[in-house]
Image 1 (spheres, rainbow, N blue to C red):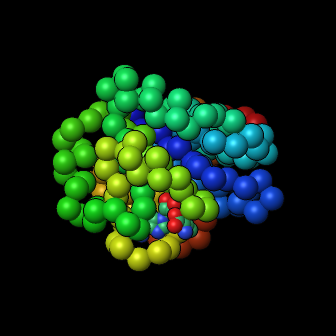
Image 2: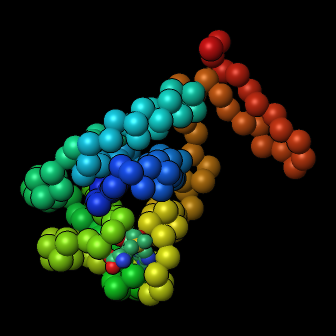
Length: 177
Ligand code: SAM
């Protein structure tokens, strides 16, 4: 499955940490990359640093035009899921989403999302109908979509890998840094 996260409404002066976490959660839980509808190279850099140490090939592309990205995605048989507390409950639609596409774009907002996004999406999906956070909504969506498989995923070309332990910390250095 190909999964891309589109982050809308990022305000460089206040959303750096949350947007970085949207990217880190996307990377850790099975997305292939993040598109950012804002031109903040700092986000790109910090996520790339994590990827270079912890592996995988997660990409970040900034300064995108969201309408163009959505149009191109849909033209190439992709489906679009917009995460919003106003949407249908994830439990009611996730099987349909999984069955209908191998290419999924997930849109998450920061401030108020333009109404066009609700119209452009194939599904408007709520991780529960209460207001909370784009990070939590993305994490839950990715997990339900992949039915937990992402939690055991290994990352290629990692320089560092954790050896899971009941107590203590063990870090394996796989390639000389
Ligand atoms: N007040 C904004 C609005 O009315 O669109 C929402 C701000 S919220 C902090 C930022 C993002 O978190 C939303 O755009 C949405 O993607 C996500 N989000 C928050 N609660 C959610 C929920 N219950 N289900 C799905 N996504 C949610």
